[in-house]
Image (cartoon, rainbow, N blue to C red; front, side):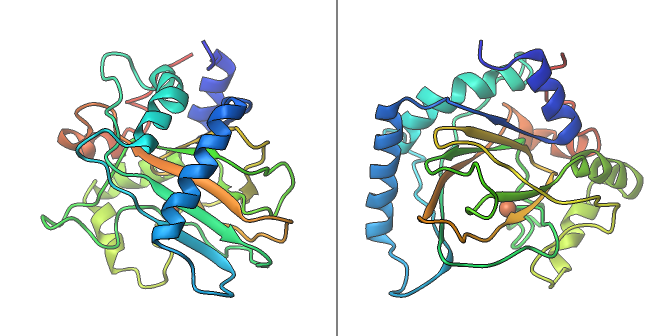
Length: 247
Ligand SMILES: [Fe+2]
């Protein structure tokens, strides 16, 4: 049991949670090797600073990134999501790197999965984001994720008022940071040591931050769905905590 009741409360109230010291040294080394292998296939331009992503897919299973997910992340995710649902294995990962020196502070949050929309016009919603931190983010501006705590709940209230399909309307937002005009509050940077796992609610306002630290920031993200999520996404986004365990 790695997710305490206090952690579950933090996740429900703040919309995100950092669980420190999840990965073993071996898993950390494996993760860094897998990131290096993906970046070899999709390298950044020479001299590039700032963010650089790769999107390895593994629908057919049998991928070392899926094995790492199953070992390090799945047991924790299973303690956040209601057991009557369970969590589906992801079919892709996002390798997220931030190459220093990149001085940057995001001006606004975004929500994932609305630019572009799915072919049927619906947003690519999911339940929660999980991120394996392969590099140290104990200090700010080391490529930390910037988050706007509590926005997952206020976004849910907004959608309850305007209807779930107001989420798809955000695809028309051309600012580069699609998010509704709700009270945001202050942004904070998620912090913790290498080997932590971050969980963030799908609706939580977030954005990528700068990296003025000594090394390239490396995170492996997985977009996770509670089982059956896509069949009930309209109900979930207007009741954002409905897929998650209480207390
Ligand atoms: Fe995002």
